[in-house]
Length: 284
Image (tube, rainbow, N blue to C red):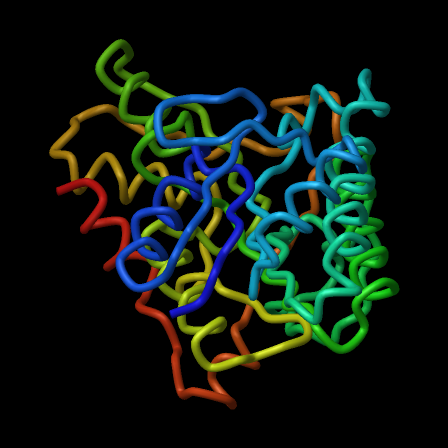
C-alpha cells in the first residue's frame, strides 16, 4: 500500500483518480482550497509544496492539477505558466531528495498537429499556443528534475462526470437547438476520465516510468464525436460539419492530436477500449 499525494483532487479527472487510488492506497488529496476530506495546497507555492512533501514523504505524487482554459491562456499567460510549469517543477524538486516518484498529467496539445497518423510517445513535440507551450514546458521541467523517477501521462479530449466538457455541452445544446455546427477538420482521441484514471493506476502499480499515452482507442473529429454522442443519447438534432476557420478561437488547435498508447501496449498489453465503447458507457 503506497502513500500518495494527489494534487487537483476535485477536478474532472482528479475525482476519478481519488476514487480509484483510495481503494488500495493511502491517499492525501489536495486542492487549491480546503474542503471536507481535502487539504489545501497551492502547487505554485514552492515552500508549501516542500513542507507537505516533507511531512508526508509520499511514494508517489499524482499531479492532476492544471490550468486548462486553452483560450483563456492566450490573455493570461502568467497563470498558465504558474500552474502548468512552476507547479510540476515545484512538486518534482520537493520530491527529488525523498526517492519518491511523480506521475504528471499532460496533454495531446503538446504536439504540433501536422502528423497524419496518431502520435506515439517518442514523437517530437511542437506545441502551438500559450496553453500548449506551458504544458510542453511543464513536461520538460519534470524530466529535467526527475530524469529517472517520473511518469508523464498524456491524455486527450477528456470528458466525464463532475466537470464541464465537450460531450456534456453537445448534449445540452442538442436539447435547445435543431441543428449544430461542429468542427470536422481537427482529429483526436476522445478519452473517458474513468478509463484514463484506471490506466494511470495500472501505470503506477506496474512501475512504468517515462512518457506514456493513456487515451481510448481510435480517432475521430469533434463533429464525429458530437454525432456519436447525440446518436447514443437518442437525439434528433442534426450535426453539420464545419471548418476550423468557420469557428475561430483565441488559441490555435492542432489539426491532428490523436494519441496511440504504444508504451502501454508494449509493457502491459493494455490497449484501452475503443472511444465509441467508452462514450456509450458515459452516456448510459
